[in-house]
Amino acid sequence: MSKIKISVAKGDGIGPEIMDVVLNIFDAAEVPLQYEFIDMGKSIYDKGFGTGMTDEAKLSVETNGILFKGPMETPKGKGVKSINVTARKTWSTFANRRHFKSLQGVNTVFSKAGIPIDLTIVRENIEGTYGGIEHMLSQDVALCRRFITRPGSIQVHKFAFEMARKEGFTKVTCAHKANIMKLTDGLFLETFYEVAQLYPEIEANDIIVDDLAMKLVSKPESFQVVVLTNLQGDIMSDLCAGLVGGLGFAPSANIGENISIFEAVHGTAPDIMGKNLANPTSLLLSGLMMLRHLGIMEKANLIENALLYTLANGAHTGDFGDKTIPGLNTTEFANTIIKNLGKEPDTNKARETKATANFHLPMRPLNQKVMVTPRAAGIIESVVGVDLFVESDKTADLIAPIFQKHLSENFKLVMISNRGTQVWPTGSVFTECVDQYRVRIEAVNGSQTDINEMYELTSKIAKDIFITSVEILRKFGEKAAYSLAQGQ
Ligand code: NAI
Image 1 (cartoon, rainbow, N blue to C red):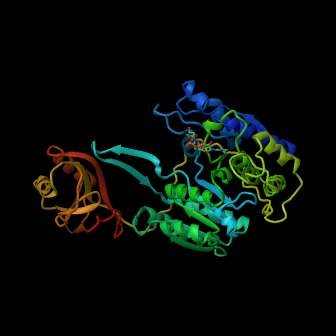
Image 2: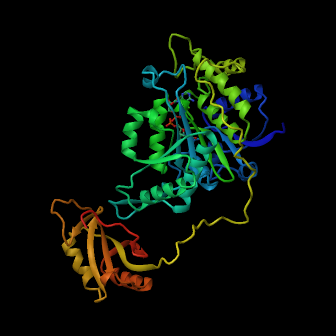
Image 3: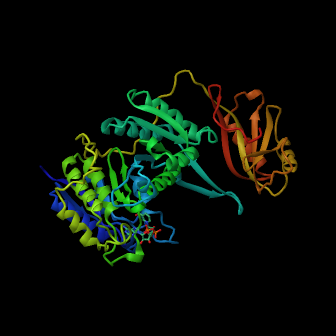
């Protein structure tokens, strides 16, 4: 079998220790991989590369299409962004897949109760609050923009259903908060059911994310694949890690169209760095996801069964397991897995999956791709008003006249809200306000206006009050493309 070249970044802290032993296990199992070692992480930040990676490292990943990485430290207080998040976003790894499975020898509340866990979380990996688009609107008020896009949602839903189809899952669940965030989570949910129609053999259902949190703890066996937006997925996947014994047993794959990243989910563990104490299981499990992604199924099963056999027989590093059995160091634990290659546990063996490689070498585009979905025919897009965000420590009844004096008969002041709750023309005196108001101006009778007219009006009003942000109100057909205030 010809060898597939992958880029390997050992990472910081315990990264090199756990990566070295994982690659030793791969070599002992004769995995057909060739490693191109690249420089990423703290030492590269320290050399002055603000992205945490060298140009050679970037080229290597963009050529090979696979990055296998250890944990990396993001320097604190230097204004640099996390290399982990940057790598996931820059290379468009839109789906974060994490698999949570009970492991014999790793005791949890659930294993003791005889409830097996075997579920997969697919988290949208680029959008949501992880856009990191944040502004202070005043000294008191911070705002984070949360992007949910139709193309981005379709990508992650398609990934979840494709994965389910290939790997024999029969149900995919979308978790969301569309009851509150009707436009953002609403779009995520709407696209979920659109994509589900392409996979009629797979049951599709949805659940509110807080209900999911409760059911994951009370009835985890009722889920197979759960797909979520970025932050909700982040939180729920750590909850699932807790169900199977912690972050040390939770592998992670960041999958994109061209480039995919496989990494352990824990950090660099500086407290045990260099002591040969770290548990390599999470990185090894992530490596097994990588082998399966590359279509190297038999070797993945061979190694996974050796790992499961090793754990089932009580071998463990110091951070988990039966304390009556002495803990092994990192090297000893890995060598035990190597010794057990060819062995299988009695129960709970590696799940056989069809040998379907998902991998192709990156096809380098000439330029960045702009993803736009087909527009429904006959939908007229119109501008109907503007939301002005303003800074003021006055009350809403004093703010309203400042706007009204600038409005011609074609426009009306519709409402003023504070922290999303309507405070003018009606509201409650018990609503506590901060020094940021949203002031909604609409063309009378919901009629169409002109975007330039909105900006001209905004610049006139700006002479009298500090406008911190402007959001144009649009309609797509008859549908308002903006939310109402609480109480409106
Ligand atoms: P951490 O995961 O590094 O450590 C938390 C605790 O878990 C520590 O007590 C540590 O000893 C233990 N631990 C973690 N991995 C272990 C392993 N494989 N075996 C045994 N024990 C293990 O989280 P922390 O301390 O919050 O972050 C440390 C650094 O790691 C930070 O610089 C952070 O930015 C970075 N980090 C990097 C990530 C990545 O590269 N994907 C993810 C999370 C954090």
